[in-house]
Length: 111
Image (cartoon, rainbow, N blue to C red; front, side, top):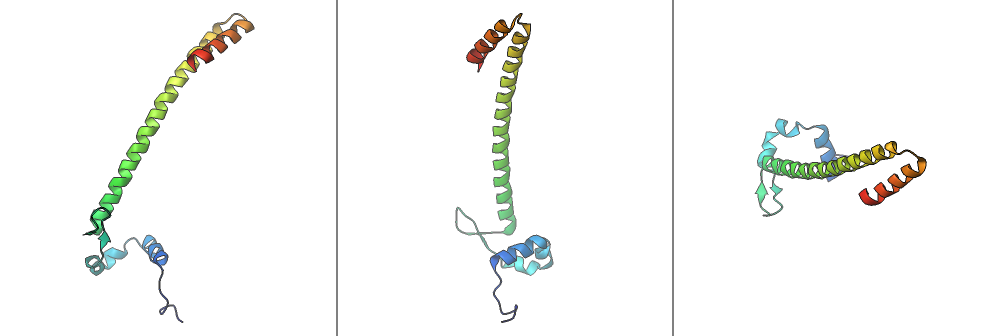
């Protein structure tokens, strides 16, 4: 059986399209026959509409991750400030036992 007779796998098609992103520009006649099912309604949408939907979903997901990272950064900043204040108090201590006492008290009360 020759390669021309063999069935092309979906993975091979996907790989080819990744390697040739201008394929549909060079074969515009295929755009009129392509149908992408729209997940919620089950109807067909254009390739551009589907790309926009995917981009919007990606943007929403990225925005959510950015919001989470921002919250973590704020929490880290607060912890850094608390740690900074504790270190300053420990540095002001006059003896090792006072430093240990300040450190224990600070860790219990602040952290």
